[in-house]
Amino acid sequence: MGKIKQYMPFSIRILVFLLFIVSGLAKMDPIWAFEKQIVDLNLASWDTAYYLTRLIIASELALGIAILQNHYIKRIVIPTTILLLAIFCVHLSIEMFKHGAMNGNCGCFGQWLPMTPLEAFLKNIVTIGLLLYLYKHVSEKEKGENRFANLLVMYLGSALFMFMFFEKTPQNENTEQPIKHDNIEMPKIIEESEEPTNSNKKDSLSPVSKSTIDSKSINKIEEIKKEIEKQPKKTKSAFANYTFTTGGNKPVNIDEGKQILCMFVPGCDHCREAAKELKKLSKDKNFPNVSILFMDEEPELIPEFFKETQINFPYQVIGVIEFWNKLGNDYNTPGVLYLWNGNVLKLYDGTEANKFDPNGLKKIVDEKYK
Image (cartoon, rainbow, N blue to C red; front, side):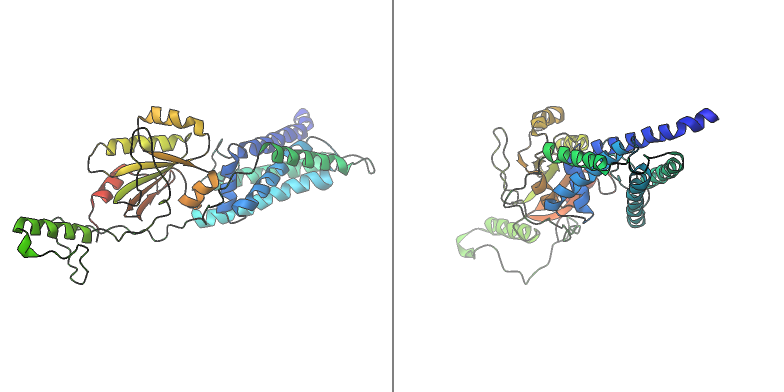
């Protein structure tokens, strides 16, 4: 028992050191994911998230290192570490209240080790308990021997490392404001036997003299008119200016007729699975064209993406911030959008409740519009 008590403070120090160092390193891989989390929480814009994320990670690295030494260990290091964990606990409590205790990834260990808000909350409470125990059983330097400069060097060194090795995520000058897909409406089902009635609509075809054409031509024109009436009004989407090409494919007009637009990350396994499902759906000749917007994150993996999924969809690569502004900061990858004449009628995103559903998409695409 005596040996356990003797080695307990040192063991706690090593454990806290590893927790904070691993947490900081995980948030760097990739750092844009942590930036997006900060933006999603409305703590910063994409511009200011560059500074805030790096300062937060620097704090974790510095505190992890500082817990191993004795300068101001009781007056600054342990209280600051407990305060930081308490702030995280408050944030996690709010997230659990809003979205549920077991929903989502808190981001404590980035993409390395996904944790639910409840798991992260309990982890922080246990860590705070260990730090309180450490506070009672550790000694700091004698009065006059503590050097605040030592702590300052640790933090400044960590911050310098972050800003030197992690450049600002590039943002195109013409990047629009984040899109909110709040106007997404599902088309209503019209049975094949039904005919839409809309006598007040203006004819979209030029008047034709019935005396100059036969009855078959008239019937054909009437059918075309009815099909046009069943379509949503043409509009310019947020993706209209992109040119999607690959191999010998012709450029795709994403706002023309029915289209499927995918928002993928080259190294994302879930994105690759969604691409494979879309390949199966695309074997149906009546299924809309599929195009891809790739995030400019490890673009060298795009050939591997196409090789693994065996797809040949047209694509374009855009910057990280532009990608999230187009998909919407509140959404996640893989993103699959169904557009009709530029109108977004369905959006799948992420890997949870709203994740891509190939059967659901096929049903929606086959529905008529009213």
